[in-house]
Amino acid sequence: MTTEGIDSELVQRLADKAKNEFASQTSVCIVAADDLAGHVGSGVILKTARGIPFLLTARHLLEDDLPQGWRPIRVLAPGVSREGGEFRDAGTSVHFFPGAHDDGKPVDVAIVTLKKGLHSDFAPIAASLDVVDGADDVLSTDVIFAVGMPNYLAFKDPGAANRYLLSTVTYVTGVKGHDKKGRLEIEWGEATVGPENKAFPQLADRPELAEFSPGATVQLGHPRGISGGAVWRLRGAGRGEFWAPSTHARLIGVPVSFDERSTEYAESSVKWASWLRELAGRIDAGTIE
Image (cartoon, rainbow, N blue to C red; front, side, top):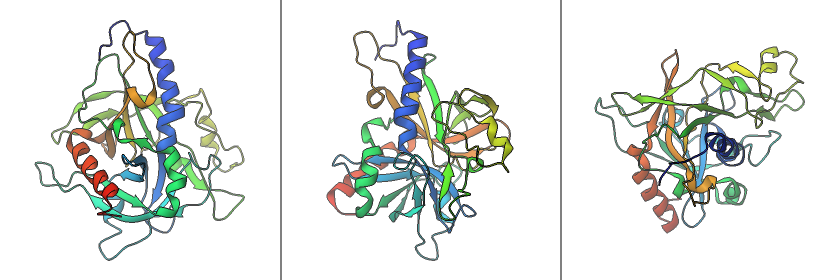
């Protein structure tokens, strides 16, 4: 695909559209324990060729809770319930990426299959397998954004004991390079709050959240909770091409770790894209549920 002659302002507008109408919609918050005091993270809802939704996330969010037997994997999807809601026990099985990095540590990616009774809820917000790119190259004209749900923007609804409020961060950033494991090095720092993020003025005891209002420039807090989310690459359409998020937005990484300074590391799709497609085929074939 050529990117010659792309209008940078147009690409930015398309990036905003992709964030608001596509990437944020596919993001969910997951808990592999009792509540937000447990392992909280993010995930991306994808769907197989037959349209069966499943969850892509980070392995470390799940593995510590599962060795002694199955525990519920609860999911809350803003794309399904824009005003927050209850975490629903949604998972049926967990599949860890079978490979490891050169240092012997596992590639930090997992897939969760979802209960059939919830497929009709999650399918409308799921992205197709076409968005997963087996390459993670980045051009100077690309727009890169990270999507996820940091813990400091997820909390109980003060008006309902069993409901939660959360806000997705869609952060335009950049790829600084790759670390020794081949993971993407994503810049994490100052951000402009997009229109898809909402303020919760009723939370008077959380005045720091007032900064997270649409259009505000803020220093991002610790990305704890964004693990399992997504790094998206948006490449503008070339001349004569029709642009759409589903054809020009590509999922190239899963955030998994923070250096405690300014870099979020993401497992590159180069490692896991083929495995994901193979597993999706097995879901369609009914060999795993």
